[in-house]
Length: 365
Image (cartoon, rainbow, N blue to C red; front, top):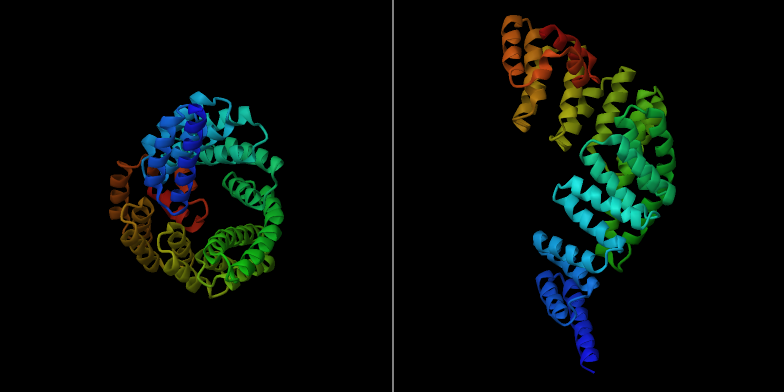
């Protein structure tokens, strides 16, 4: 009878904790779960729930302790390792997260979520081959459009444009359908907040896929289809900076005069992206407008004061403007802080997409 009462009381407390959590009262939820654990100290699910609420309340150390307790009670529960891995990843402990994800996979080898989570940590520490391997396994288990889009990003990072394009061809139609469905749901009155959140997520994924595909098509010389993707993105969001950046590249490749304005618009919409400044500066370099290119790098330095590209760019422009002795001296001084500046291969890698700037940079070595 006593055990029956304790169990029933503990269950009631956990129900109250769930209700509190649904209202955003995470500290209260954790408090109620603590009371339940006094009655049921071997309840792994209660530790798991309290860990989540501690995390949402900003008490990650307590959350990790609770996950450890839950795992000791239920060591074959893959979800516990997955959740603890997610928490470690959010804290920047990617090695620890990978260890937890790997254990989750051993316990449940058919979990696409575990492979996808491990991909996130591999990507964060630049283990791109392992990230692609995990994402490919996740796709095999659950061929979701967003997984294809993310793998396309990895293929682009590793120079595999054709594989990236193939993945995007799979992703874009599904993301378009998901976007249209989410937009229709968000237009309804019921559950508007949740639908709006879903719409924002799906919209971002769809826009990213369109612009990624446009970028590949532009690099492959398929400019009409690239422009069609960009226009589709801008129809959805007229303030989507990456679309203007790619449209500028298409215009530049076509020899159109609109490239400068589109690069400027991309910078205006998202001034934190150094690549946009670099693209514009490279365009000015091609036209021999070195002072205008220097102005672009000055603007980048004002926006991101510690960006080495801005400092390098201004020195490169000074050299192109005829201030060769001063530029070489400044380059040597900067090289004392960054040895890459004295390595031809490193310079070519830094400016791999900006040959006009790279050509002058190599003269400074």
